[in-house]
Image 1 (tube, rainbow, N blue to C red):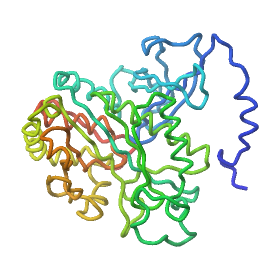
Image 2 (image 1 turned 45 degrees about the horizontal axis):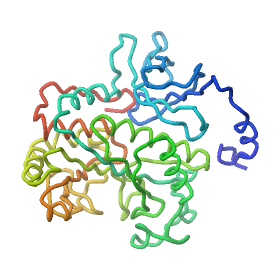
Image 3 (image 1 turned 180 degrees about the horizontal axis):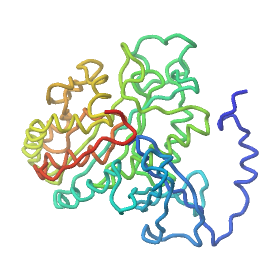
Length: 377
């Protein structure tokens, strides 16, 4: 029998997890981003009491030489707690803690994009930027093939799978439902889910979130998804084109609005925002996947409900455009826009920062970006 965690007897685990936990002890699982810009890491500690706010959580450290973030001779990395959630796995008073990572100089690491994003969101706070992100992902078996697909074969062509119902149309709903409930329990602002166009591909939505909150909630929702999949013995991939050929890729469509866009007459501000986004298309493409457009180039081909990576476009109800204006927004003359360019493995801090820089601040002068240590040039 394959020895992965999903194959272990959960009734044995529950014997221990059902033990009464001392009232003055809390397990806190610290979660952070490693040097690849995509990988999540975690470890736990015991706290003497229930933290009432993020300020009560202590700084911590870890071995950065094991996460592609430091050398062995100077390996200590610092974890700074920035968001706290209820732990849906240990439950009770136990916590999940999302952390920023800093190096020995107390400077943000290469993949700590939250620090810069937070500064930009603070500058744009009067515009009240709201975000909602649609995270697409694919469920894989342990051997790397899509979950539910025939062994060394393919299912029928795309068509019946999107928002489908039935054992011959959707694969892995138990995982999706478990993740949804776990996010609600944790306090993640998850607002929906659906089966996607390619079989074994799903989507969940997070939002609306104000400013920096978007990145915090999406990263923790991703962590919870990987952790749920671990229990089921399957793997989650955020690859934007996991299966080559005539299959839809996976994106991270980003819905966005400012206070002016949401008010009566907001369509004028929507049109202005789209015009500004068009000027910075190259900058956005570079930031919308961890490999500076190389991953997205496999997905943004102009086919399979995508725009081409080389050109900026917009349109009402057009899922083949860079920016989609929902039909209801066009009819009501106010609301939001959908940026369909971000890849499924994007960093939400980079995406939201780029959108606000272009549409609100119109300022890229102080922007600095470096390739993650864990990626090839």
